[in-house]
Image 1: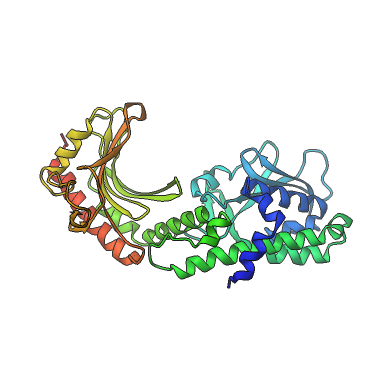
Image 2: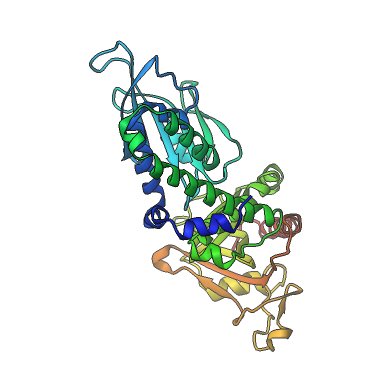
Length: 387
């Protein structure tokens, strides 16, 4: 569990302050340096690594678009024979993508890909063990390794290391491991405290330690993972010619989560393009319609608002703040609708929203999204081939 000790330790740590410029690259640099000094550090990430079977030829960070590559060769082999590699994908301020891991599951020149790990404070993918299938019935294994294990194992190996470089820097390595442990404690404690509710609030200490953005991303990913339990239902709900999509993005310190039905066609070329669904951005619960640049924003608003089934064209934004409601909920919407996107972007995005509070549960949000996507399905079907 975190304590004020964790907070104070990070505030007073020079190494922690040095890590804030580029968190992921900073850690990759440290890990590469440790592995180069003592190959046993490979076991921090790949616990079944057999040092009797392989020589570690090197460790390169930011190589071939991968965060960290560990180059290996079978013992006794020479030249270009029996060469292999491991991959470590480290994410702190961004989220892992199964598609990205799939792209990295391939041989590089004469180096055969063995397996990979993806690391972070909390796993934001569906499973801690992924088997990536990639042509010719090949399966590649990726495993999640959390920062708590990294800190524990790194310190254990460092204390046993016979490397003079490691021995002479043991105090720095201990500080580094304590930093990882403290960050892990603080963020996981906040996630536990806000379990199953959409609460993005961070206390002053987290803001001062620059952990707020990381927490917001982890929290958004946590709700997205919760919604994956119902993915089959939403996929079945999608009308013919449409796909259900659940997509995250993060900007301006906020999580943006889309749950929508998308036209199963090329957006820019298809004049009748349509995306309709729910977007959660921070504490805004948005009903939205998105179309390509052939459509005017006002036309989109009235097309989907005059009936009152999806957007509300009768909404009066001039009411006093306390009297403003939309879809039966309080809102701070200052215009009939909000929007973004222009012709150069290739789309128009029109929405109205109401506010949810930090006590709104995941179950409540799921039920609201389910009900609204059921309405969206009916709207799509009733429109037929669209307008």
